[in-house]
Length: 194
Ligand SMILES: Nc1nc2c(ncn2[C@@H]2O[C@H](COP(=O)(O)OP(=O)(O)OP(=O)(O)O)[C@@H](O)[C@H]2O)c(=O)[nH]1
Ligand SMILES: [Zn+2]
Image 1 (spheres, rainbow, N blue to C red):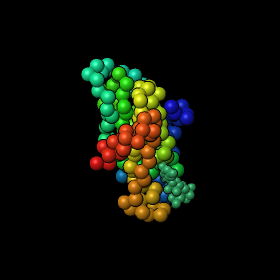
Image 2: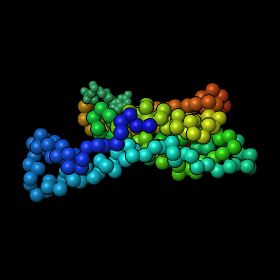
Image 3: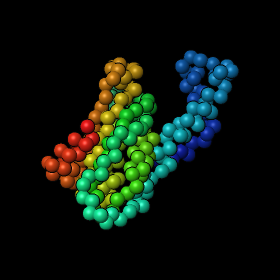
Image 4: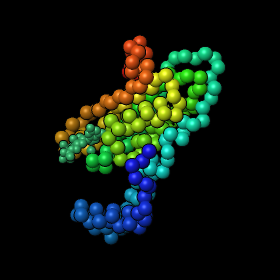
């Protein structure tokens, strides 16, 4: 869930803030090339911060009965996402790997990617996002276990500041048998890292 309600700030206020930043950076917001920029930035932020407008848990509510006796991990790898670090509001670009060991119901796999995107399109730190995804799956599907691994590059580290291009942060959040059963955990890691 979000920590704050979606915006009560008007589009005009957001555009004025962008205009201020342009001036603060040293450019002239009234020159032709920049005239529409505040509106474009507000529009693209609206899209990139769409996570505040959704409840990712609701994506998992529609499930399908699985009667064939499937009792292994379901793993969706390489779910690409763009998020924004909450410290600098700079892009965090990476991929998430999501797995769960179902009981008798499975979820449509696109919903796992929707959950990732719902939590990504907010101001985030990677550790929190990793846990939020795993806990959402655990809360709604109540599977035997969940595993989430995220690998991502943080622009605030690669483009500025310490300037460490290529550095990538890995985080994981494991629940239930994926955490506690060594064989399941090993299988999860093998499937995710292969
Ligand atoms: N743990 C964690 N740290 C993050 C994440 N995204 C960015 N950071 C770090 O957040 C920290 C913020 O540190 P500050 O010292 O307050 O900010 P800063 O002066 O801009 O720091 P530098 O980036 O070192 O220049 C930095 O070390 C970032 O690398 C994240 O997802 N998880
Ligand atoms: Zn940052």
